[in-house]
Image (cartoon, rainbow, N blue to C red; front, side, top):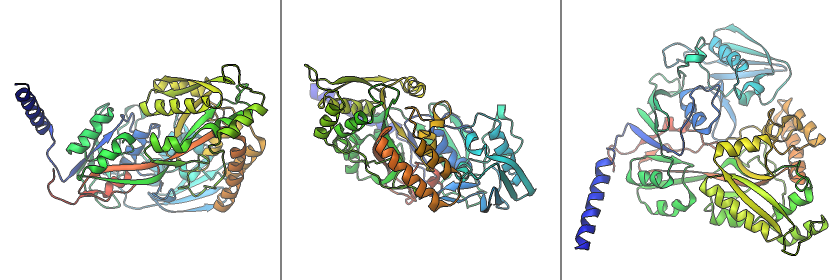
Length: 502
């Protein structure tokens, strides 16, 4: 009798799954997201979900390509003449509303950024005047040479005259925003007049699925077509066994790190920071918690970026860590503990597990660590306020080495920047400041190489690992490309090989 009821339950479950399964449509794909985007104004978007979807709706003067290089987009070419940058706009580019894009739209977009709380404002503040001598030429007159300017100009261009209080997401990109249900889904439809050619897919649906298990199950059942960087390592072995799923893994630019509060009397000492680094077994964490989907980091500049320079940071050596702590005067007490620290992290399951493993590793060398996890908003607010001893975070989407100024220059202490640990080194400041004011790429790289060596010695943060980008998708999808920063722009080239599917 029990077997009979069990069989009925299994059959009913199977029928329910079958009933809810979405019919295959060769003209669309469904992309699963961990969280919801918040805003589709490219000038104001700061969260990764919004920025990555916006890359399909808008084009900038330039675009960061899959090699992390600055490439032409709305501007087919540009010239740099000292403190003057001249952009030549493509002719015939249409907005989604049918209006032709001109130099006036570029001027209006940049000016609106300069008069708003846009995250791009500081990078564009060097613009003194914008001149538009004709419909397809934009001349930026700069107060001083500013190398990160080109990266900042990858921001999406919107039509001139848009009402900031009633903004309508109108761009020139391959897809148009049709529908947005916060916390549920985003629906994009293709733009037939896209200047680089009509995209293959008629529709892209971004479905918000916060639960890891549900997200993976929907991919396996075919209710979701693709997942990017939202696959917990624990699920990967099973996905690899599924003959209907294909997986692509490539190195990326996102880097996780351990942050130190240099105003703390214990952590202000470089010997202590180095000892902590020496006590952390990154290989163990990468293998067992990250499923091998990362590589050990030496700085926040990834090997995928042109400015990368290999430098040496402390590796796993607990005996050396013990000796450093002894010499620093932090002897083990009767209970074996030298001192205690508080480690802040988010409530994310994987991040909590990583923090707990690091805490155990540090206790082996006599450092007791209390892990405290908070909802992300609360956690991040504390970090920005400097209310921490140690914490871990991930820098995402790094495209320009000027991140070193933003993260470590003494002028970048919050709220001016992200120097949350209050690091100060005059030689470092001079190097990154000089690098900001030359367009010579080779010179910039040499300056950043010296700056990275200083950081490796001072260790204001401990770089943990570079994350790999991973895409899992239904068999039959073609045109898959991984962008180092995780953008979805590649979806404009994606298509189904088959005309029907499971």
